[in-house]
Length: 162
Image (cartoon, rainbow, N blue to C red; front, side):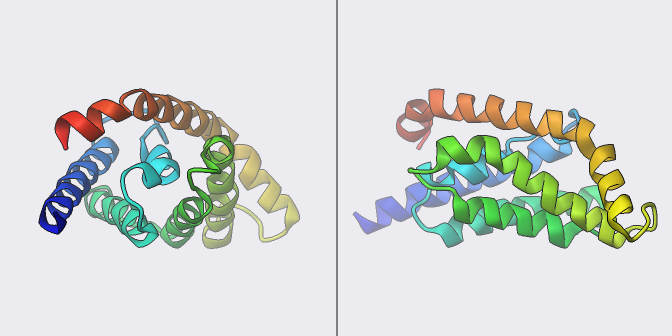
């Protein structure tokens, strides 16, 4: 029994790791990946929050090896960890629209803090957030799109593949 459960979880982990990593590497619209949907809905695949955090951060790190490292990585990763921590079976309906907002606020704060593009005052921070608004649209669309796909295909993924 334990061995079968372990094998199923390893298969799910590898499949999702591959899916998340590739989704960031193939050509796509900026910020249009399933990262946030899996971060919010990870409880459907793994009970252990550490496993969910490890999965998403590992996929981010593996794809960043190919895409390149950047100065605001810490803020990107921290925002994703926060989204995973706040997401559960009871909160996913709230976290689906909140995840892009949490990411937007934290990641763009990191951009403002770590770049010389914006002045280091409230006006520079506001300018940074304003300049990032076009990217927020894709965050919302992709989070809702992939969340719907995952929820609709949940039975298939849980019972047919694994």
